[in-house]
Length: 333
Image (cartoon, rainbow, N blue to C red; front, top):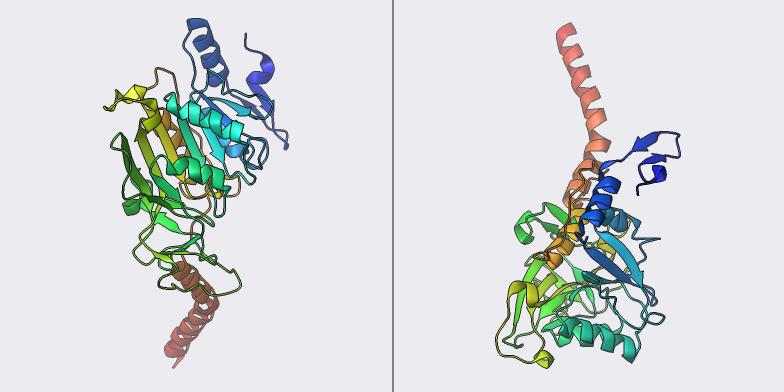
């Protein structure tokens, strides 16, 4: 049954909007027995919340006909069987051993997981991901030749360094995700987006000081900011990689802020998050229908562009006045 409040809503300014496609489509899917993809967001340890700073993410998933839920493993000591993908976004405090065991079991059972970690995230998650061939570093990525002004720790990734082909994405206060030199033959890794040759991982970043690359301490770039991992766990047994729909998939990103409400609609950040969810859940026999929306997006400005805009705004008007005055003087001469 579709209720009126599901298709008609009134905005704060009094404008009434009608959205009939998604409630009716969801109802048809329910009647026909086709299951929608369901994405759970882990809670309980300071993660980004779909009811607070990840509301745009939640709406974007709903607009694409995903179902969205939250999961606190401290109160619900199991990962629900209807989980298509599990998202851990920006945890601040350490999980319990029991919670890590549940996540490990989920992965060994061909689960699909997205982990968005920030610098100095709880070590338990970094240890968990180390078993899948990646090291999530402690430190802050600095890319002086490609960042969003005014913060030098906002690395900007253009289309040529984004494997998904998105034009401009950026990652405020990100850390690096480094594939290990040696890892299981049952695992395949693919960096998704990475920094420029001029970047480095600053181990002791201080916002009050101009960062500099310290040889022997900092890690020089280019650096991966996100990695796709596919395969099976060594704990799961077997010597061959199974079919695509029967493997564990992980996407690990060294930042959670890029998808927050503050940055979601800037550049292609929101599209990047949705594309990663689609990449993570591709091949599942579930339905996903994209909703065409016209989001407001802010212009991303590099430091060079910002300097040009500032200088132009200061000098352009006086220059135009002088030029007009010169033309008038020349004609009256």
